[in-house]
Image 1 (cartoon, rainbow, N blue to C red):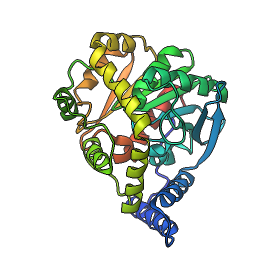
Image 2 (image 1 turned 90 degrees about the vertical axis):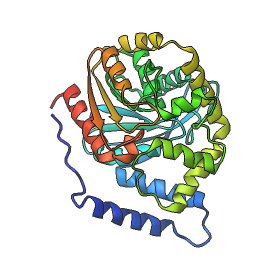
Image 3 (image 1 turned 30 degrees about the vertical axis):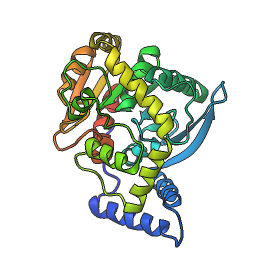
Image 4 (image 1 turned 135 degrees about the horizontal axis):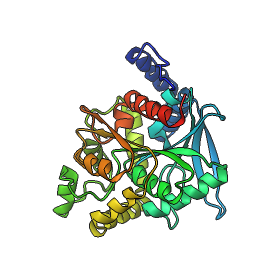
Length: 324
């Protein structure tokens, strides 16, 4: 079993010093929030042991991704959620790069990867299967958060012989019993997931996190501007997700789960306001070989709200999958 030992024993103090260093490095006079964000994320990726690469697919689609950890170690592919990007995984990756080989792509329509005709979760999974082929990956564990969880399920369904394990973190899905505040709002004709303005972004964060991490105001503002800049591509993605939510029977989603025979780990925030924690029962019932970890004080985004705990859970599961 691979054990996960914190690399910074000073914990919160060390993290605070890191932020001071990052903010100081980003605080040049006259620099835009966008430039500060780019510096901040570049330094955070460096702190996590990640480097940036671009893979060009056979159809000439470029996919930007982060990579880190020992090249000879087992590979974990980390997939972010709707409105996110590869940088959402940086703090989780920091804990995993000492012992696992990480591949962390920007999903289509997010970060630096463009959106073509792949606005659905199924389309994204096909793009990422091509991405894995381009990188020569043929044995990996998929780790998906939110929308990335749905993409991971479809990817694993299409590549069962290459998918060694599956980690679903507050994963999107068509659930029979999901009485969350967001789904209730959608049923009333509202759409709290749509991001067209900074105010929309702030509202989305209020639904997505119960205990948001510290982020400097200028960086948070730049993240909001980035989300608004992607609004056209992400509105197509959201329309596809909601169409599936409204038209696909829950029984069909259960058939997808029933087809996933590899070991699976389900991680969930008990305070998730998008996909109620009760849906973990449906996931655990549908998957052939699963275990569930619940974080009582966390919302929809454990990878940002509780990155160290999330990393420990992933590490322990990967250790079981690959052995000592």
